[in-house]
Image 1 (cartoon, each protein chain N blue to C red):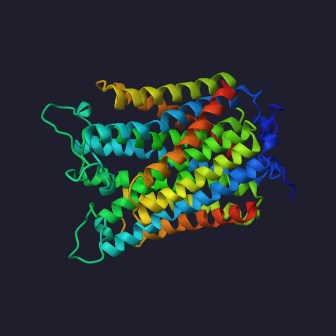
Image 2: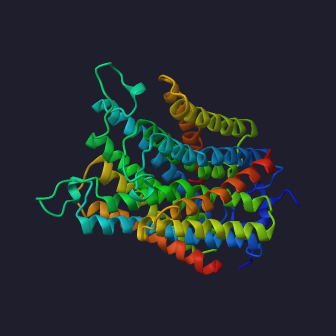
Image 3: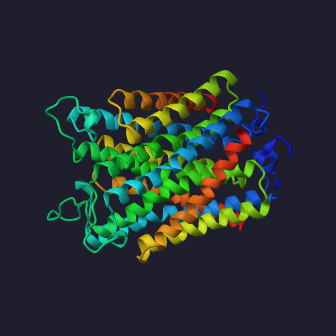
Length: 152
Length: 152
Length: 152
């Protein structure tokens, strides 16, 4: 492998294209969390700012369980999907096995979609969320370790 | 367009340079949120950790409205500006129209600066924040979709 | 310097390699925060979702000081380490001095590791956390400014 890793940034590189595709999917999934929070805020009339109150009879409210559930799912995305954009990109640049890399990206993306579904759309009993979380965390940890070893 | 998208990563590519410029602006805007939170914490003596208390008479406190307002604005930045760094970069790599791309970056960046201003600096009645939020979300969704279609 | 900044994305570029290495370290550090939160949730039986409760006698709970401390440290990582992945990458692309860039990356990474340690592992009196936070913020601000000036 050449050290000129920028040569890997081509759409002919299946690994890079797969990374871009799943990253775009996850960006869109994440961005939908805000409107989803907004939906539950309106439905339950739970607003965190005085200027958001639709009627003078309402007061700010922070503890609606549906709103907070979506917010926890969203925060979990920030903690896991955002690092993936970085570590997935770095992993592309160390020129991994096509088969392994593509499946790691798929596993991560599907795990995160399932995580949102069982957490914030239809609550499914544990260990559903725990398994989805773990299936997202492990590929990230593995890619982080591989990049670490390749650049040590 | 060549598939060797790394060739787009040059400062002669107006789209990439515009992306870098507005990203740097937004990084600096975001980083200022922490000192802004700190300012309100000191002003209102609202500290979340026992080791932060400046006097033995104080207790930890989590509900100051000014501190929480800046923290909500900051969290909204995490949810929107951080994904932009990824999706804006991917969008550069699919070689979009210069005119459209530059204006999407400008719209996003200005919308996010306005969002912070009307949320956490001078509170301006709705729909100011709602419009600023939407004007940031739509370019992100559009870019996400374009990257998805280009890599499908 | 050529405008074709992609040529800097090679493992022969010490600055880029250093960026990749410390970024991988910080990704791994950040990802450990979730299991650390989980550890304290189990230890103190503090669960935020009804479906997580291990026994029918438990209720959801949001105010355990150990859990909340790790969560605050984790959120501080989101606010500071995630922007670093973007700004550090942009900074590599403006071809900075090798000596300065490598030391900025090291300073940032070590500051953030110390920040987690004194915040969430062994609580050390202030100004320990304040100094660690500042030693992470200053390199980020400096790199942001340099990228801004280089792309203005």
